[in-house]
Length: 247
Ligand SMILES: Nc1nc2c(ncn2[C@@H]2O[C@H](COP(=O)(O)OP(=O)(O)O[C@H]3O[C@H](CO)[C@@H](O)[C@H](O)[C@@H]3O)[C@@H](O)[C@H]2O)c(=O)[nH]1
Image (cartoon, rainbow, N blue to C red; front, side, top):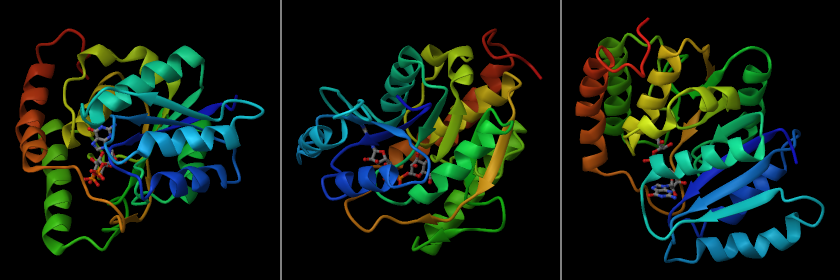
């Protein structure tokens, strides 16, 4: 077993899943991979099962959790976090299956945590705007959404919805995972917010985010709405909820 687990949630990622797994295993640092698949109707999980025979001859480097149906990205990660804690991984990384996150950046996210950060964030907005192939409307929406979150919550992070991150497992053991309630972009915001509120050290690592070439995004207007109103609700309730420390 390696010290770090890369969790990749998948829903209908038949055209990406094999290539992304191979790309993670090709990195200079050895990572284990956990795919959390929500019964994708396109056979994504079957592809992973076929690859397990190839990669797991010495140790189970490629792991798969199958859930019965589409339950959202947030709960897929929570399921993965519990798995990582149970197995005793020291570092847990989150990554999309679709190559919008470059697997080459995994090592620098890991290094940031190995040298002091508790949560390192692959940030599109740490140095300007580093997004490739998004329509201008989506860039503006995402950029201003991050500014909005920063303004409302006071969290000192430029890319608050980032989904390419590395946690020290002790963070995931400390924060109340059972209280995380959002599933989409708001899930990413909520996780960072609670981590920050618990006094852990957050560090942004500049990355370039590239729009997927294969398959489709599963984000929807509902998920965007959840983020917009959820941030307000989350910030206000943090003033009253005992499980969120005040700082
Ligand atoms: N298991 C599971 N996986 C899911 C689900 N919905 C999405 N996924 C998987 O989660 C990853 C991201 O999904 P996308 O649909 O490609 O997300 P996106 O719109 O590109 O959003 C990304 O960027 C956002 C910030 O701009 C991030 O907030 C978000 O977390 C993600 O990284 C992909 O690997 C996709 O298959 C689900 O319900 N269940």
